[in-house]
Image 1 (cartoon, rainbow, N blue to C red):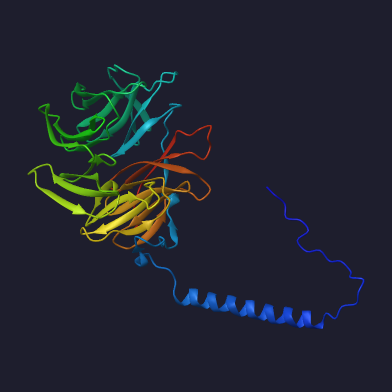
Image 2: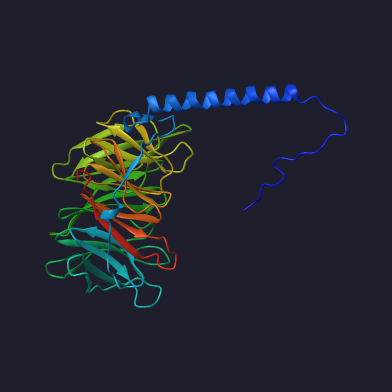
Length: 373
């Protein structure tokens, strides 16, 4: 750290100097500065910042003081030294781990009740079990090659049967479960994306949408209730924009929104559409659109974001934070002296990696978020 030195240097001047005007000027300057401090302090007290002051997209985000809920965090007593794609659901954490090497080919479930892990038999064709999601009946994941490509698989939790859904050759798809339906967006070529919905009970796979040419999907598919939401990036001349599509997987109805800006990884949270975007081109700012209206900036410079039941969880500067939509209040979930990385959100269940100690980055913590206590 650079030192500040010789900030004030006093040297006697050989010539005699009248310092009275200097002293008077200094006194006046101090009075003016002191008055200005009081003025701005009083204005700040009279008009405190409020979460209700979420502002237009061309401005800087406003956040209120946070309430610390970190006393409610719980550490998972997972004994594996390496944990990959931890996903918390209904008191269980599913993850992949190694057998001492560098490949994550073992699938395990940790029970918060028994504080122990059980291995689930999986037949891996490639190197790593990635992108894991789970519900009461299924566990879905990608069996991924370190050289690129892989296959999409699922495990029937009631029988232990492994379902091979399909291969992929390009980027690893992001998987979402809606009951018995697995939704994902697959890159099918250098200029082609396909949206798939797969009924895991019948194995029926349907390519609902094909996106070609300049249209690209930003951030994969997000699930909510009986629907999915995704964004399609397209260009009009030299301007890039996004079209947000909400699809009901039961009846096939669609609702389309145009936000006139780049939209990455949109999600549904109650009556809001939340997504990542940024004027700088890096999708690291959280925006809210109420009932499809004009989006407004909520938080800047986040690492990631996931929508839960009535709230948004996100990572910012090593903190795991939550914003509750109904109250406009902010909360911190990990301690201020720790550093975390958000991993998954389901309902009010929030799970994250504790990365405070980089020699033990796979410590998992979680919380059932209750802001009403």
